[in-house]
Length: 193
Length: 256
View 1 (spheres, one colour):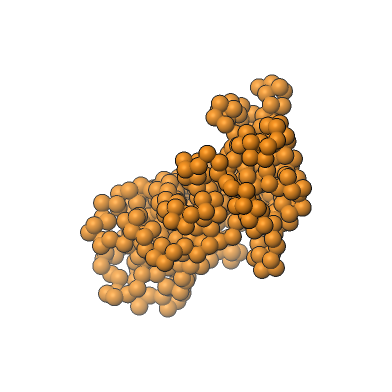
View 2 (view 1 turned 60 degrees about the vertical axis):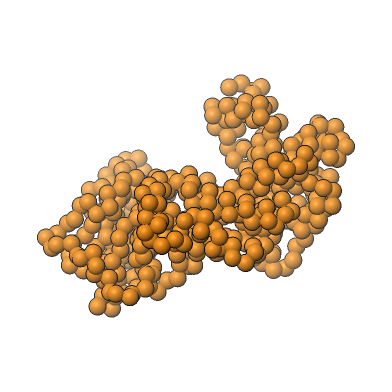
């Protein structure tokens, strides 16, 4: 065992979360430093308002700190857990502000971002590159539907109104897209199990 | 549960997993999941897809001063006197965190072994920096079976991840259900819990707590406790019958 030789930044995500829950300021700071780009990135992508996104990001870390006890490593990584908290808070904020959570321009911009495949992203995260390629490979209408639901939190009814299509068609697009993405991610899921 | 219920659930599972199923339908779907493991598994898989979508969003640097504002909001930047009232909450949160990780037991500092008096609370060298101790947990055959971390700040804490595995040579646990006895020396106890003790240089040790391993011999566990870098020497992972499953040691030059 080494004394004082390991920086907090090299601690596992789970260990950092457990340490933060004890109220150790250094650990909390290390936790925030590790995840702030991801948390702020999700928040700003969904709400498209840097000030509101910062408030959501702050709320996310506060919620993680207060509710660390409900984190269960068997159900997903700390990163996923934190991302879900951020996303839920961002969706709530958007729903409170606007009847329609997304404008057509924002949707197209976001679709461009999530389907682009810069080499460094592919190298950084194989699972992300696989799902990015899968979304990019979906028919445009299905990709729009799954991004509207999965990222902007739009219901099938909202999607049908936004796209000017019957409710059943909106549901079918979501379902078909999710089915294809699930097929792509199944090997990854099996690796985790 | 009927096939018709499952058929309906399959029709809404994607929206449920993405969190966009409207209220009444959502309530009905969740009620169905409570009694249908197959549908529950289906929704869990779809939720994994939804999580994957979020991972596509690029990170973005928050405005300057964000870290400070967060830690202020958590009350962690205040002087010790001011955030002392949080201590109870923090410890409770840590306890709950431990339970959330599937850990059990919480008896920090309550069971000292050995004859020597416990070390002084002020034994940490003045001015020494708080830091993190780390070591490999080694099974009796020197097989690495995990890592232990001990944070020497205030409040201090210990965290460990363990993967004893089921296939260690000589493991009685390979006998499957027939092996009820805890403490297989190169495997892991299939039933009951494992315990952790922090060892000190004066020969005493302190029981930190207990936690359960899953079917694959994996477990994660954490506990708040004072960690004095001047007196702590290692740790032991014990089976329910007291046999040693793994040990961790400080560097030789750690103390003094």
